[in-house]
Length: 456
Image (cartoon, rainbow, N blue to C red; front, side, top):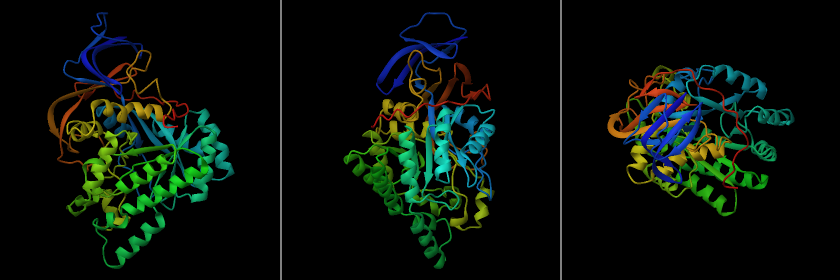
């Protein structure tokens, strides 16, 4: 099966060019101006932008919080992802207390069956001891080469010594580790203080977790990583102060990778005063406009590595399980479908970043950082034909009613965006055509090698 994408504008981190792409048997066979070879399927891409398929580095599908399960499972979540141009998601296989990593991985493989985009797994660990350490090599052998640790949540939290030991062990096996950075003891005390004065509404959420709560934890992680002589990856960075701590570590010569999310670029904490404010309760919380500006500037200067979504959706009835108390409201929001539109509209069109930087942030850097390069993340001969075609023409308004995720709300509800994903190829299959998902369930597991460690 041959597909020819013609007359499009190819966007890669190294530059932009007018060229055609010939796809054959699931791979990119040729990239060249004016390809004249015959094809079974011809996609006219005049006026459109051609990217390597986008990679979402941070999703939570079918995550059981005990009191409730996320609104999106892999079937609904990956349908939304592929319609938004994301050809690969990296979800978190969560190893709960008493569960082996193998049990967690097997469970997530079952959950992901029938996905409409490709998927891989970070292993989220809730325990660290000799038994868990012995499992890491087995995870690597099965294509799981990145891990996540939490400084928060009773069910998942590791102490500083455990994080130090885990970082050293992961590094010895050439794996990369991400950490959710918040000072749990301080934020819990602040929640207690707010509750004691009757502040239980969503307005209390950002007050319980101010910028310093993240920044202190980022600074601590940087020093733990320095002592462990290991790379560190900060997930969902949201504050200017946290960014400054990472800059200090890099200035010391440390290997630091930074991820942020669209919500920290386009939404601010004034949203907690809105009538449906529960839908904005996520952790970290939304910040100030000056934090948005700092992160956008860091994207422009190449200091941010990747943009994930932290898609962790809950319906409004699930949010209501908190009974109006911010500290008991399920944390998370939907966003997997709108990432490219938000970045294009509020970062590229505003001149904060270039199209080439968009390609790096949404695809190439993730492929390098998480062991998928050069098979994914680039438009070059021999790579997998995971390709996203973005039409920059036209404008629309984001609404949960027109999104494919299984959730009755969106934190981006009512926001105007420019352009949309028109077509997507997944392993050479034309799965999204003219903005419509025409082939479901074609995703497959992505076996990943060691991180490219491009900041080493």
